[in-house]
Length: 260
Length: 293
Image (cartoon, rainbow over all chains, first blue to last red):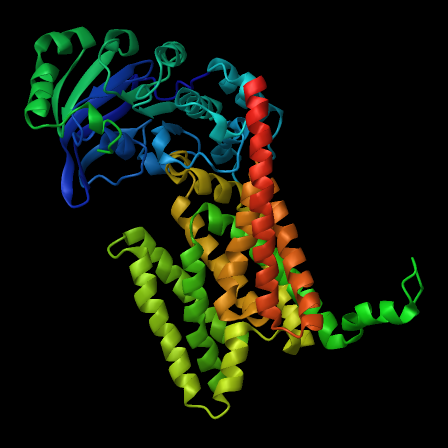
């Protein structure tokens, strides 16, 4: 995967400074200051409602910040060229009975950059095939999407993001509800992208393999609670403390699909 | 027209079954039914997949006020209905986006209100019952030459814009958030789609009327949805079922002496249930296929 190094003079892909985002009349993200480098994977953890999805959506230009600055690939998210940001949503976010095959969904990744008039050509087909190959879904390309398992659906979404050939990849809990094999396959793919210079930001509930997934880990609870290498952050006990509070307040794993 | 006897069907019998095509008003009606059937059903693909069925109903009912006002002031039908339908569609889109009031509540309040205003104004006229009837259930036989040209023009326009926005409409129907993150304008696409739906509804009101237009936007597409695996197949099959319903329903209504709009919608409904039955069969077969893989 090629990543253009246009913004690499500083090496910073995403700069959020004192970022405040409100959602449904309450503050979902409170004065967050976070940088993400090219070729770096940032993991975001935190309880439900801690602003993980909000942060991802703000970076994707889906939510407007109330205050603070947000600089993505050197610009405001919405003024970026089409196809710059790939967002991998939770699989519950779409209707899987939609009339589409695996191929059709992955091909949608090409649509933003194609716009209205450009033909879906050889390069586009190649990008779709590469996406499918990387997540090992090529053999299911012409299966209807309703006939997929949850893990396969997640792979389709990642394949679509790869086919988009973005400059920034955002993933919303892609490891939730998938089997260990899929988790390992996704981790391998993402790490390869990161190795190629892609900045990746991903929310998760799973900490077991945080150091294998991420270069840095952000603990979020509306505010930035802790940020550092996964080992540092886990050793600091910041997340454990937050996690403990979560259980005291009766929140737990059962709400893992809830949107922040 | 010269009748050629074929396969033991006598000339007179043939003439009987071809009778509807002899009248010019019927020819115009067939062109209209075919166009409306295809247009509604093709656009219906978006209505079904984006779950906008109630919106179609709302636009149709609200347009009624515009039609009546245009009618009473002697203004052009398409202008009156067009303005109100498009404003309604954009209003619905705005409510949908803002989400302060639940969408079905907003439609239930505002658009039945506009509908009632239409009936109120209409009922103060002398020829009330006859005209109301034709607005509610359509009057495809009264379509004149100019109407046909207008319908062709609007259908071509809707088709052209849909083709232009094909990718955006498809992507935002399946996954609007990701399409937007990728740089597509999901909001603008939705507004444009609502305007296209408003135009589709205006074109169709003459054929099937206010009460039944929503059915033609939903039923063929819902039938096609059950039988197809890809989006373009669904739209193609839906358009075909719409054409069969439109032309077939009109043809049947001639012999059954029934309301053309109602017959068209009933035929579409029958096709829907046939599709459901076929779907059950296909499903059994595909289960076997998956198991044998």
